[in-house]
Amino acid sequence: MFYLPNEIFGLKHFPEDSRHFYRGDGRIPTWEEYIVGPLHGAEQATWYGSATEEGLNEFTFSPREKHISVRGGRDEVVRFQFSKICEHWDPERNGKGKQYLFMMKINGLDGRKDDLVPLDHDGFWWWVDIPARDLGAPGQKISLFALDTLDGQPARGVTKEEFLRKKGRCGMSWIGIAAWELV
Image (tube, rainbow, N blue to C red; front, side, top):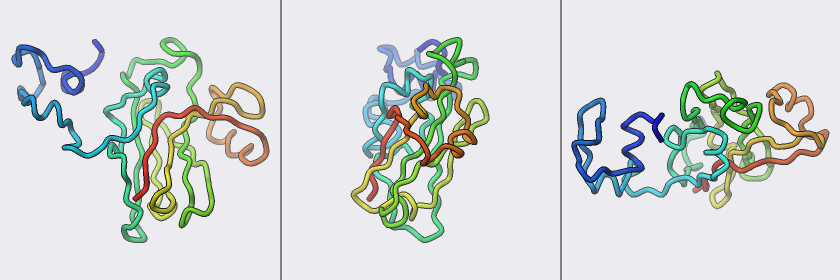
């Protein structure tokens, strides 16, 4: 926890002496703010422990809310994004090996066609923009996965391009990272 900025550390730990928040903005959150959290009572998306093991920052996940509306306008886009816990965290040096390829499992237009959509990344942030109508239908679940095996081989280090060439042509397995429910 020592690598976290004080603003993020304060989301998980409330010091006995409120002067010990040491926030950059000097603000001291109330106990109520700490308990309710940044979602102000909304339920948070499901976060699996495997995400922490992979050096991902739970507090940068977006959308943070568990429920995603798919009833909006036809042009509405949902951005899924997250970052590493620290700019210095390296999956080979600090983790279990090469970086996983992350992808969203969506249910397609009206929930009738499952698909896996790989995320883009710049070495610190991962993101993908998906039209809300393509996420699925109300009542369905969507998930963020890490590609674990591809064609019977460990998939650490597989690129987006390699995955897209083999998608639908061989067996694969995944590790759960996060999940949301569609409303």
